Image 1: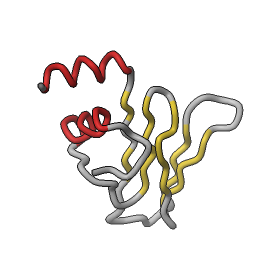
Image 2: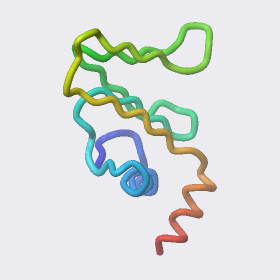
Image 3: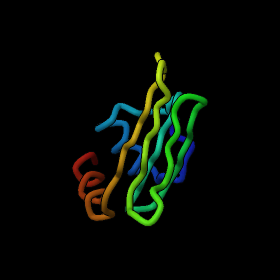
Image 4: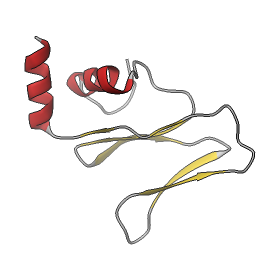
Length: 88
């Protein structure tokens, strides 16, 4: 189970769509309904909120190898409810 601010339906969507079942190794930026649900950077990968603009900047240092970046987004309570009903 992903240890972030994501409810069980959002976690189920991440498992089905992005094949994420646990908090991933490496850098990540999770958003749920336009809100930050979790962020982690590494020594080689930085994720920063843009200043004065919406969005994020992702900086990967030259020479970085064998590291991953995950940027999943779960949108809409209505979408989550529809997904949940389909899976029952």
